[in-house]
Image 1 (cartoon, rainbow, N blue to C red):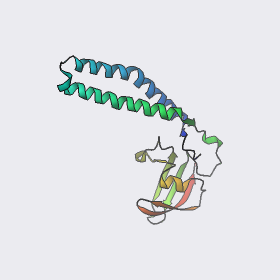
Image 2 (cartoon, helix red, strand yellow):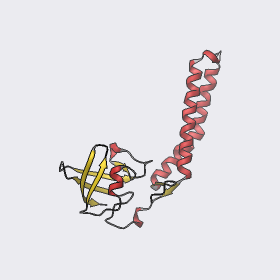
Image 3 (cartoon, rainbow, N blue to C red):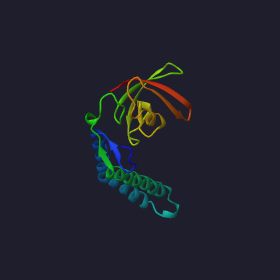
Image 4 (cartoon, rainbow, N blue to C red):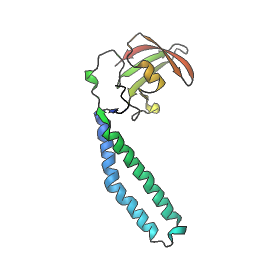
Length: 158
């Protein structure tokens, strides 16, 4: 699953992105057009900060739409039930013990588009994610990360 052309998503995340895109293309574009129209009605566009801000917002808005379309065009839904049990793969919930600090961490391995470190979701393409992929319970893993060499023992894989 290392093909860089595909974006691996859960079914739930795919649905969320499709809904967001639909909302942006329908209601969002109308809202932005309204803001631009309102700002345009205030007179001289060359000195109209409100118009400039609305156009800037429109540009950012269209960029988000473009990014979503790109992700969705490359999306592949991942079904975790088809993976071998006990082996770390995308969508695995992995509990590891840092051998230097003796602290335990739980990571949920996801695609880069779904990664959110605050909620424990790490990308399979991150240094830790790459180091864990394909490993089994009990294995020792050494990962070269920006913080230095990390050593983990895999405690569980769900």
